[in-house]
Amino acid sequence: MTTKDTQAEPVAVAAPAATKAARGPVLHPSWQAFADAEFAEDYMAELRDWLANRKSRRAVIYPHSRDWFRAFALTAVDDVRVVILGQDPYHGAGQAEGLSFSVPEGVPPPPSLMNIYKEIDADLGKGEPRLQRARKGSLVGWAAQGVFLLNSVLTVEHGQAASHQGRGWETFTDAAVRYLSDNGQPMVFLLWGSYAQKKGQVIDTTRHLVLRSPHPSPLSARRGFFGCRHFSAANEWLAAQQRGTIDWFATTASAR
Image (cartoon, rainbow, N blue to C red; front, side, top):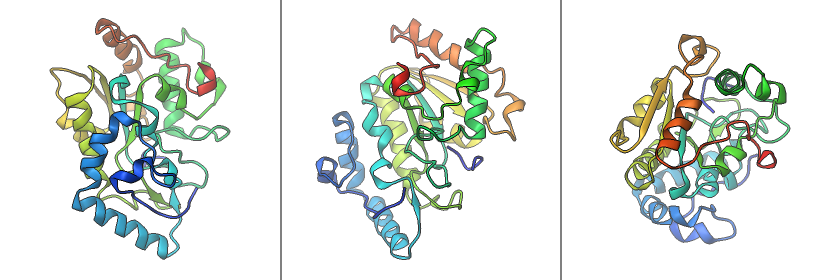
């Protein structure tokens, strides 16, 4: 999700040991060293305090805290094959599920996601609007295949896009991008729009493929996102690296 598109419960950014606790965030073990280092930093303590204060003032925060680190729970570091960077979670009730551009099963795909589907159908669908016709908004099936769906900011308040920007999440997710670039297997980074492209400046382009285009938002998709063919390009590069390919039509867990 990004601010260009248009669930809640007690706030807690956990300390490192809580990654295994019942009420703490659940991360794949391969992310543990990274999480331990970042959760111990001062900026994360400040973010934790700020979120707790917002909750004490009855702010409605999306997504549910169990989903803040969902991208880190669903995809192991060594399994990441593609990274798609977003901005903020969706700020409407029931939309955010902790994965960039993704919404829960049964929720209609937002406009940017529909434009992503249009491009996949045009790129790989042989003229058939497969994803557009299916209109399934959950991208859990992509995460299961190694697509790391990371928002730059992991929380937002109801009806207020970008309301949690500049509070510390960007530091955490910048570090995650750098960690993947330095420690992951060769992967493809899809950077759509100037926000994602700026965030991707830390990527080692000698090891990874970086594909850039305008954002899929209705405001900019026709300026170069449509026709970018990033999905076939990603698969061709991954195959050449002997890392397999992504079934971009298998968006949901049940689709695989």
